[in-house]
Length: 114
Length: 114
Image (cartoon, rainbow over all chains, first blue to last red; front, side):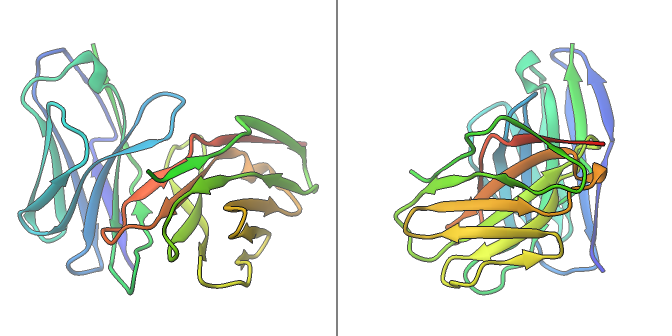
């Protein structure tokens, strides 16, 4: 069966510091990978998605970036965090089948920028 | 633009009773998928049920079922025999793109009371 991991689970960082969040998937090959952000009391906003190694699409321009160095690894980064980067970050995976995918989510990372 | 609207920010139901959560969406696509996700206090997003637009039969998963009205662009979730563990935020989501990008509603907070 497939599992998805995210770490760290919780992170408190000062403004201007760098960020690295990691997501890994087990039990499947060549998954589509996604990064979402959920601000307090709101729905999910898609940040990045990747259909393969080194292939990253950005949905929202911001000071965040994503990379996919390995087939089942997806990293969310920032060189300098802003207060507005605080939120709950969710990674998701899917496998393309037919016309659409079903996405499965990881446990998430709670980021607080002070 | 594709949008998803959940008009009920909060709902409550007594244990063992039935509750229906509403969702409407807007799209010009003819083939798409709709999902309901549950986010308990742990904040992990859990897939509850999915519906394929080309299927007329409403999807069912144990105590969860949907009422899909394609012409009205309505996709409601019915929870039967509500349990305390059903307490969570419920998000309706739409997928009509080739990349599988999900568009989420803002969620409905459901409280199941003993």
